[in-house]
Image 1 (cartoon, rainbow, N blue to C red):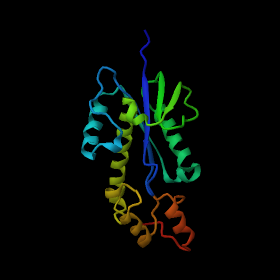
Image 2: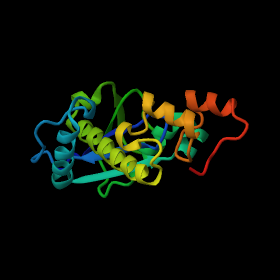
Image 3: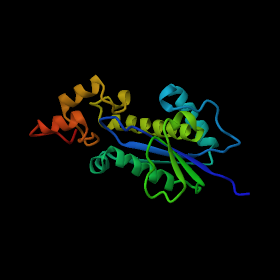
Image 4: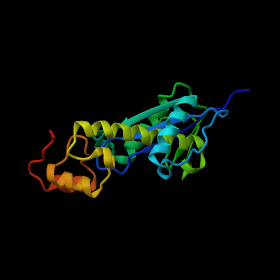
Length: 199
């Protein structure tokens, strides 16, 4: 009997003003599914880290892909997210039998049976696992970027448009990790003749 390998796929970081969007694909071991899997947004950062370790230890395959701010600018956030999802699936060490994706869209070019599931991160354990992997991986990257660009506080808000972050943009201008097509950044650049880019 052929074993069914379900890959769950989800993203993290569609909304921030800075940093990449990440996507993860996870094939769980049906005989060793971590307890407490849920949408990454409804569990604490500490619990996400714990589950991240459990998923990485027990899953049959895990893959993560990023789309940079430059790619987001070229493709728009939807296109860049779907591109990262496609690359995450292709990066799996095992070829899945089927793919289930959180949301409304199935990336083009998967060449696999696939379906999109609204609120899939709350309904399908493999998608919940992908949500956690994508979120933790992206958060860790933003902490690294904070060490390189300390003026923005990336380690605290992960690139989201908090009051602290928008004040830093107003004061220092955007850095190369900012998404220049996003609302506040687009307005800032449109009104600035000389935008600093080497901070």
